[in-house]
Amino acid sequence: MPTCPICGAEIAEGAVCRKHLARSGGASRTVVSKNWLAVLAVVLLFAAFFAALIAPAIQQVRSGRRSPATNNIRNLALSVHNYHDAHDSLPLAPRHQGAPAHGWQTHMLPYLEQSRLYETIDFARVWDDPANAAAFRTEVEAFIDPGASEKKDARGYPLFHYAGNVHVLGRVPALKFGDIRDGTTNTILMGEIGEGPRAWGDPASLRDPALGLNRGPATFGHPRKHGGVNFGSLDGAVYYLYGDTSLEVLEALATPAGGEEMSFP
Image (cartoon, rainbow, N blue to C red; front, side):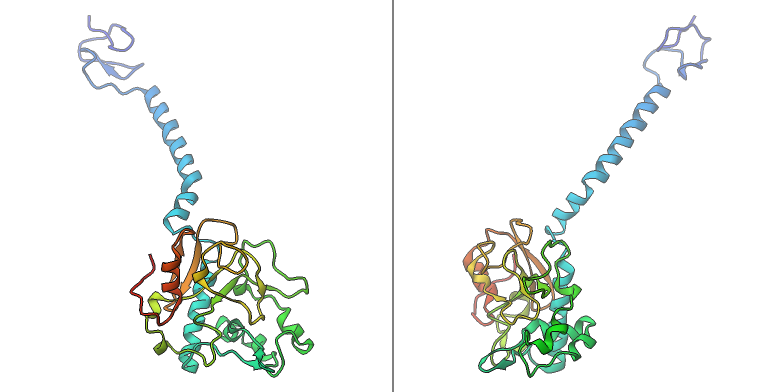
């Protein structure tokens, strides 16, 4: 009498063992086991859980280790583009008694849906004049790193968690795109900073990328001490530069007309 290849129970020739759904005729025949199906279901469930757990980390690596500030950097870069379209130059640097009175970022307000706030500012006075206190104590979402713990300075002014490239912004006279002979795609406009953020109205929110990354309060750096830094280029794109990027590469990307044939890595 033929037997089930799994449990050895006697079954008729060509019949199926109802307990194991296996046909008689030897172990070489296909066997479908409910127990194996249960094991497979558990494995698939575990795999799905594991994939959901590590997916955010994988996505972070694939997207260039982007910080939550990436969209802000892109929006600020595009606002500079819109300013140039309207004024045929990069943001001006108004001066009061020979010193900068307002920062480039203040001029971006109308292009960041902050026209009403912009209209309350008295540009005949310096940014931290008491007459401008109400305006510059207003927090602007586009200027704040969403993940930053520190959002105001000691005087109560909301911070600006980024800085402009000193070789491009704050110049007198202001540069035009035609002056960017190295190309807007290959020139840093601004980036995020890890130490020493200033109030968003402060005209001193400018740094030199050529000084290196994550090297102290005078340099660009990641706010959460990661190895690299997010930068916006003059063409509106956002790039992630690793912390060990050479000073030669950073200087080439920082200067608008240095003549170097260098693009973002």
